[in-house]
Amino acid sequence: MKYLCLIYLDEKRLQALPKEESDALWAECDALARELQRQPGFIAADALEPTTMATTLRHRSGGVMVTDGPFAETKEQLAGFILIEAANLDDAIRIAARVPTARFGSVEVRPTRELH
Image (cartoon, rainbow, N blue to C red; front, side, top):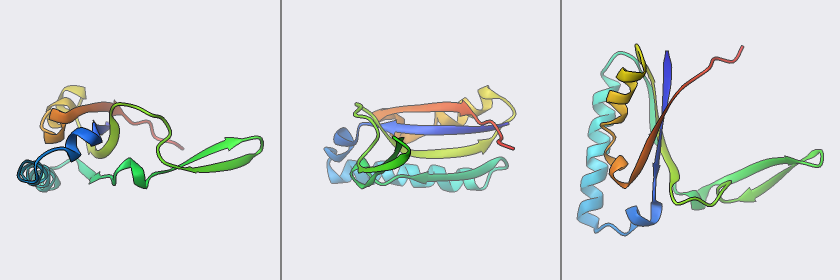
């Protein structure tokens, strides 16, 4: 089964880190990504640009409304993802538990559903 691990964090808290801590955190993230890429079941992983770079689309009144920024104001923002194939939820959780930025937010693990 495929699982999407959605990585959320508080962008402001992350941006407030001293450069040395921030660099060390991103080095941990890079190391985990390289390790996961070598494992069977890895599909994709990426970090997202900050929400200031987001564009949101909404269908309203028969048209599409486009606005700058994220869809909703929240304490934590979607910062990245890991898409994996795992035997079960426990295996997916074991991988998600290793995400370094979870120290500044959370990782939501959700099974995917194929669209036909």
